[in-house]
Amino acid sequence: MRTGKTKEAMEALIWLRGGNKEVAEEEMSKLNVVIEESRINQVGIKDLISSRGTRRGLIICIVLAAAQQLSGITPIMAYFVSLFQSAGGSVSPNMAIIIAKCVQIVGSIITSVLLDIAGRRILLISSQIFTVISLSTLGVYFFLQKNGFDVSYLGFLPLMCVSIYVLCFAVGLGSVPYVIMAEIFSPHARGIASMITVATIWIFAFITSKFYPDFVSLLDLHGCYWMFSLICVGCTIFIIFKLPETKNRSLESILKELNGVKNVDKNNINKSEVGLEKY
Image 1 (cartoon, one colour):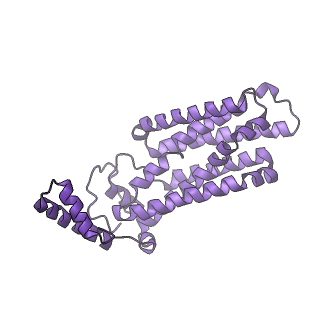
Image 2 (cartoon, helix red, strand yellow):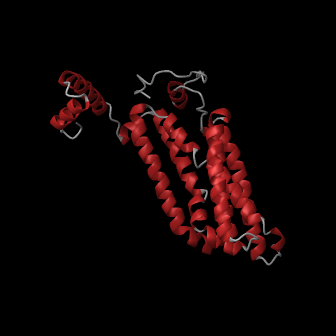
Image 3 (tube, rainbow, N blue to C red):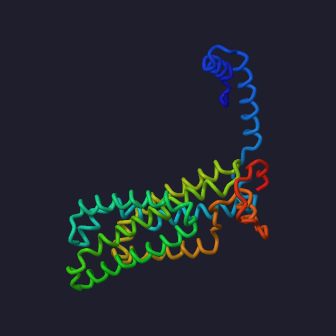
């Protein structure tokens, strides 16, 4: 119907309703109203940034999307085998990647359980703290290795650090931003805001994968992982000061907080999304 194929849509509805033309016409009328309302309320990029609350929500999602990839997940997984060959750990690279993938699955399960228990902010902040520790420790390992220290007795460390990193990523930045993206925009802004956020993820995934070898050549492995760690520190600070908790809150309450409304009822749950276009 959006492409003007009204006749074909009517024929499909009549067939779907067992030849009942009256019911099909009634449904067609309702669909026309929905499509027209969708066209009238369609939000463009200009409209998206004109509202303070929507603008702040978009900034939050873009920062989380960028941090997700700048924490190094894509290049670490893409160059996993060469990473462990360089580390010279006690576990073979192929076995290490199997373990890491299993840990990633466990992290996803943990997220589904804890998301509505701990809250979005707690999951992100706690997972980021351990991400910083694991990346920094991995950087120290490579620094010691490069400078001639005997790290043979630390052969377990690369796998342990990467496993903790992958687990924390799955629990935090790997999943929570998608939940937040669905919770902080009004229905009419959600589509284009989600598109921009996902595009940001893919752009930074390409950048980090493409230039990871250059980063390693420029900074060495230890410098590269310290850089990822520093980005995670910045992301954690941003989350602490800028990200509102969305757990068990109505969209109206979240949008009011993003718009700077004082004394927002943060326990305001399950209100209708109707009338939120102004946010």
